Image (cartoon, rainbow, N blue to C red; front, side, top):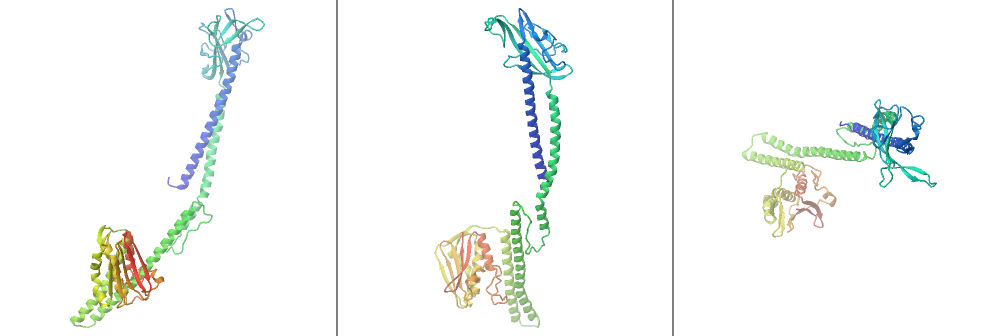
Length: 478
């Protein structure tokens, strides 16, 4: 059963049913114990009373209550039964007239603790019986000097000769029918309460789970765009408040993801449109008429540069996607910063020389870190590429590396301000709204650097240092 509604109904109903059954059973046995206790107490009192009316005259036993009507006082034929035995007798000296021979067991306990037993009377009728065994003794005097008799439990050494008498009184079990009459209404009450409880619980659970149905309906009505859509329940219970809050947070994240997706699609289309248009126009002009080998070579070189920019854009996008998907494996090796930075700078020397840039190296000896060297190379070369591309002609690029593994690359950026710097790591961010600018960057380099540095467990930050107007990107490896 996977329905929460039915699990609640069955669980609550089972608990209530078991509780009612336990309570009814406890009450039944408490009543049973009380009724049998009263029944046995009355039976014991009657047995003690009748036993006290037995006397000894000489060697004979005198049973006073049998002299007249041959039955004890209050005797009810068919309900009450008795038997009296004396020491040495094999048969009862007195018994109920309607009692079959030997149908009552011969037993007895002291007056202080009479023995109780369950017996079966003629006709297979259950009954309870009490047995008392005692001595009838002579030779005791009362205050007036008259001889009297005393009934005591058991034989007492040193006393005059005595006759042991056993009295067993049985009474038909009238408690069992009473208990049977009690069981029937208790069982009916249990069944009725169970059925009524099931109906009430079903109504309560149905009403209590109504907000879940509303939540289900609202989730089902959400559109694919998820733009501005939120979950709002009327009379929302406290238990659902965290659920709806997290759902709304999820919708916000989905909405932002969709916006990023649309923005990414738009930016990629814009970034690819310009080089593709340049590639087509170059090829169109080249194929318009026959040209010399030198002109074909120039056109091919121009197309090659355009293709390189497009390949760089696609590779950066794929690298970001791989990092976000977690499909990368890291290598942890020691990297000597003082030796690898000049080596990684070599591909940019010619471009820096063409633009007249001055390079200021400030590398402390012995600088090294433990990280993935290939990913670190991607980050540093992107920073070098940005610095060479955006530094003004004749400007300065400062490359620093400290002994704690911190690397920073700075270039002059006269057109930047502190507010613009906050968007430095946004995808497709550039300090220009024009996409046909002379700089062929798409604005993915710093975004890729941030993804890689976070993957390596480090930190990367950008700031504008005044008054030199230096755009500084600082890389701190863990």
